[in-house]
Length: 105
Image 1 (cartoon, one colour):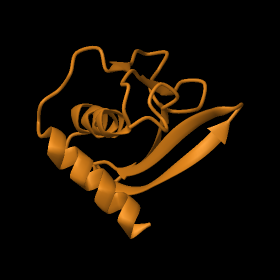
Image 2 (cartoon, helix red, strand yellow):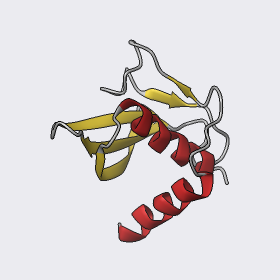
Image 3 (cartoon, one colour):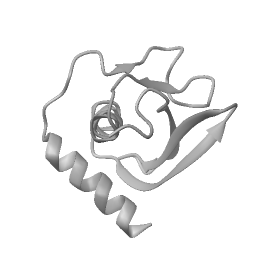
Image 4 (tube, one colour):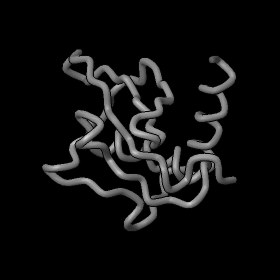
């Protein structure tokens, strides 16, 4: 588990603070609160995809703390669920549809 977080952190650092346009689909309908409302990550590699997840969290929940992450298969589709603690000390789980990049280097 520590190795996974380390790899995610390295991927995050490798992308720096730059962002790509159109890397996610987010709206009031896709707020990340459930599988059916998951944020769709539109990247083609795992490195860029994971970075896009963390960028989305940083943009929507500034100063949030990552508390955990899990990979889940739901209806034959891979999802990352990232647990955060907001700056207001509220715990949330953010759902990401990672089917466009999962397993692609």
